[in-house]
Length: 362
Ligand SMILES: Nc1nc2c(ncn2[C@@H]2O[C@H](COP(=O)(O)OP(=O)(O)OP(=O)(O)O)[C@@H](O)[C@H]2O)c(=O)[nH]1
Ligand SMILES: [Zn+2]
Image 1 (cartoon, rainbow, N blue to C red):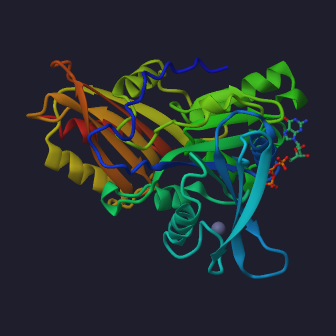
Image 2 (cartoon, protein in one colour; image 1 turned 180 degrees about the vertical axis):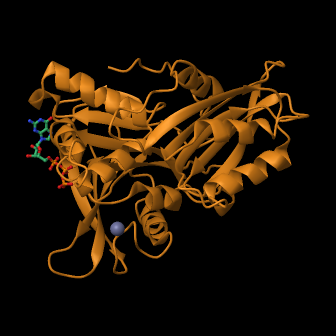
Image 3 (cartoon, rainbow, N blue to C red; image 1 turned 30 degrees about the horizontal axis):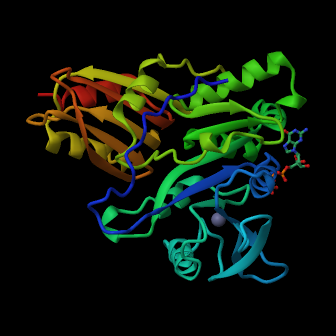
């Protein structure tokens, strides 16, 4: 449904001058109970797509308090035909991935990478249906300095169009708040099970999803069948995400009116001309992400393309929860000093945010 983003070729992660440190992109897969995550994973593990993908399931082992990360990866056997699956258990101390000790999931996967070096090119990590994606995204959105072999590539959310619409009307339902949050954080959204809904319901669920997340790519699916090139290699959190992709996405999304009856979680777009003073903007970002003024506003995701005083190239702002970074790009703005931000969260006050950003423009 959504216009494909003609991603210009994203620069290779490693060019010939740097030492070999090919990072393995990690794609996090989330979605409420029954949305179709496992269906997608089975499709990935059976479809002959020539990609070597390690699928990691956040499964509770039978009966034991321990939660394991089950690695099921497909690899071609020695003579390259057929597909053999192997499973590898990763011991995780008790507690589920999103609630466990900070970044133990990352270390566990890095150890696995060591053992299984060069067996796969992608890692797909499925979260449980009741996981809040925020802590997991933060865990994998590692600072470059950590020299991790992993790089967070994107968050894919599967939505059950049939049940999602049903529980959307039911404010008491815990599912609603969760699937909306999982949608708000997503870089790609699969609106799945469209075979179970009418044309009218499809239009409704798509507008709800678009109102919550103005930049995600949205695809309608049945049985979660999707061209894997649309969910892998998103580079949604790195400085390779091209600014014009963000500008284009932000540009063609007027500020979406929040659907009636759901006044909290939504996304707004802020466009301002001028150049920011870096220190003042940095202070403001901390202030609003950490909610230092104790408003009811909660920001879960922010992306931006901005111009800084004394710089000729765009900066990208990426924020997830309270973590953020300003990423340099090599894209010259040629004095077209247009800044665009997309802010996703609950109880957002667009006028106040615009005012606060405007004060940092010099
Ligand atoms: N009609 C229809 N059924 C679907 C579709 N996608 C998945 N299902 C069914 O929905 C049920 C749940 O799908 P799963 O893939 O197990 O969902 P899940 O997100 O992994 O669920 P949890 O493991 O509980 O989080 C299964 O019976 C699937 O066969 C679809 O597009 N259309
Ligand atoms: Zn958890």
